[in-house]
Length: 111
Image 1 (tube, rainbow, N blue to C red):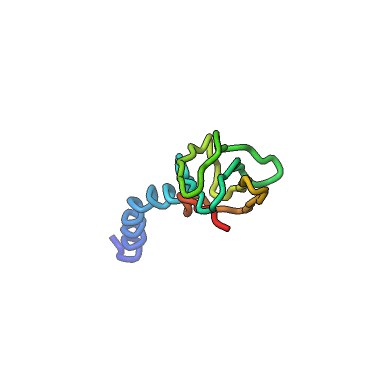
Image 2 (cartoon, helix red, strand yellow; image 1 turned 90 degrees about the vertical axis):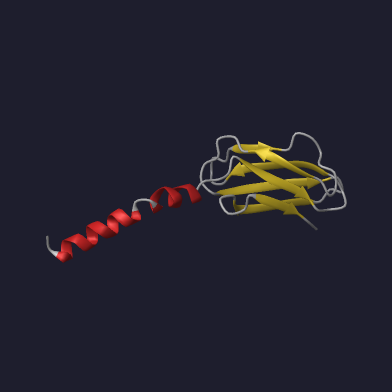
C-alpha cells in the first residue's frame, strides 16, 4: 500500500468519531432557561423561528416574578436562530432577533 493513499484513509477514519459531536453541537436544546433579572414581572414571552414564516416554538404560560427562573420547552425547534419578544408589567418590551439557542441555553432578561 502506498503511504500517500493510506494517510487520507487514516485521516478520514480518525475524523469519524468526531462527526456526531459536530452535528450534535448545532442543535437547539429541548428547553431553554429564562431568568427575569428585572424588578418587575415578565408578563409574556414568545420565542419564534426567524424568517418570513415565523413559527412559535415556546411561550410563557403565566407571568414570571422578578428574580425567578423557568425552563421553557421548545416545541419542534429548527435551526439555531430565534426571535424573542418579552413584555413586562411596566410596559417595557424586550425583543431580540437572532438569538442563537444552540449556544445560549439560558437567557437572562435585564434592564
